[in-house]
Image 1 (tube, one colour):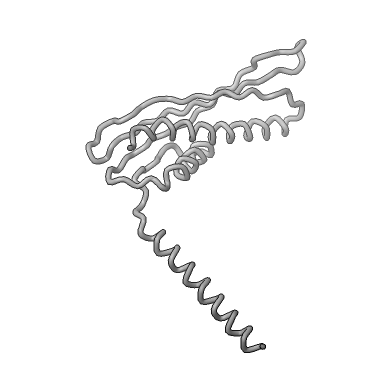
Image 2 (cartoon, helix red, strand yellow):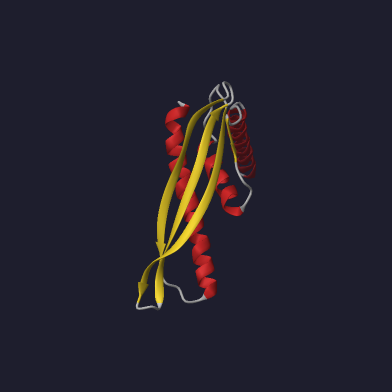
Length: 155
C-alpha cells in the first residue's frame, strides 16, 4: 500500500513538473514589448506608465513605437454650501504622443481628461488621503482611455 502511494506521488510530481515546463517555454518565446512608454518620474506619472505597461504588455508587432505621456491635475471648489463645506472637483489631463520608431513619424497626439467630484471632509488627513485616492483612480482610468485611443493606430 505504501509503495503504491509513493508511485502515485512520484507520478503526480512528474506530471506537475512537465506542465510547468511547457508553460514557461511558451512564455519565453514571446518577443519583448514593442511599445516604449516614457514620461516624467513623479508618483502619478510612474503609476500611469505602469498601468499602460500592463495594458500593452501582450502587444507584439514588427513595428516599434514610442509613447510619451504626462499627467497633470487641477483642483477647484465647485459648490459652497452656506459658506462652510465645499464640494471639490479634481480634473486629470493626460497628454500623449505616439511615435513610430521605424519611420520616426508622429502617429497620434492628443489629450484625455476626466473629472471626479469629492465630498466635504473635515480632517486634514482625510482630505489628503481622499485626494491621493482620487488621483490614483483618475490615473488608472485615464491609462485605459489612452490605451483605447492608441489601440486603433497600432493595428
